[in-house]
Amino acid sequence: MKALIWPFLVFWSVSAPLIAAEFPAIPGKRFDVGGYQLHINCTGSGSPTVIVDVGLGDDSTDWQLIQQAVSNHSKICVFDRPGYGWSDFGPSPRTSNRIADELETLLEQADIPPPYILVGHSFGGYNIRIFAANNPQMVAGMVLVDASHEDQYKQFQIKLPNNFNRRGTIMILPKSTDSMAHANKPPILRERAFHAARAEISALDESSVQLQKNSALPVVPLIVISRGKPEWYGDLSQQQREKTWITLQQDLSRLSPISTHMFAHQSGHAIPHEQPEIIIEAIEQIVSQVHARNTL
Image 1 (cartoon, rainbow, N blue to C red):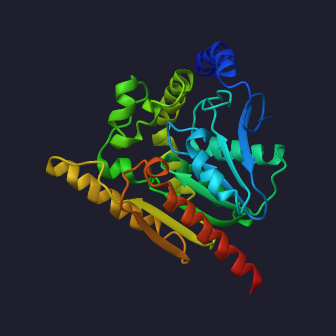
Image 2 (cartoon, rainbow, N blue to C red):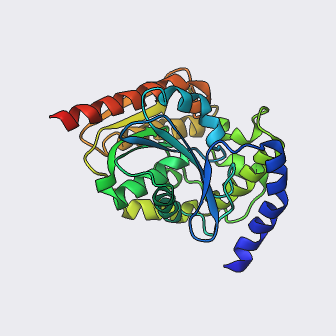
Image 3 (cartoon, one colour):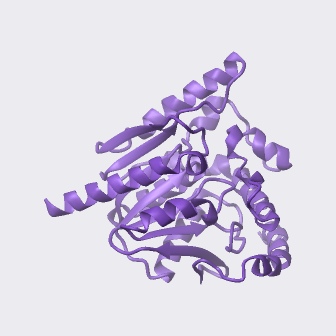
């Protein structure tokens, strides 16, 4: 285990001063979750609290516009998984079970009580679903944003590597998932995001199995947002992969009997960047539904 953690701890020890110099003021706070610290940024007020787990390669700064809008009427917290943003690197393997446990500890340490509305984009959908399955009494509603499905890699017939280079990270994901290449993000955060994403992708097979075994959700309002623009196109196999993605998105919408399926027609997979307003609308709808259910 030490051999797996050591390279990430070394990278963090070198990069942390550079991040501090680039961003002297952390937009939020860091809390210990068992020997390493995770960053969470909360704004707004009210209950339930919206908790956001971002997509692979993104960090909390990628949701600033959405967070600002939602915080006008609700409390919203966006956290950085280990290795992203202002969070330390964490122990391996970087599975969804581990991430869900880290989130639970983080919320306890940060004194952010339930109920929660969980929002997950892409790989973040894996993590919040396991969190919800483990803690159904804490969850009041959910939003899945073009979220990954536990059967997608099997159906796509993609073999996930255990070790690979930067190009390999991008090849197994939708084209617009290369959030690490955003020109407006400081190079140090892009570099840390690559290392964090590589660790998570290396554990995707295990995370998929974990979710297959623990996929039941509480009966709460759910909105599934799917991309409207294809990410895989070209030959017939690519077109079929895109059709399969939408079929799996439809399957996600059946996770709760109280669900709505929306399409971001102006966006590919990177909905938080390309069509953030539909996410804001979905969160507002879930908040309203939760309040209405509580008054019945």
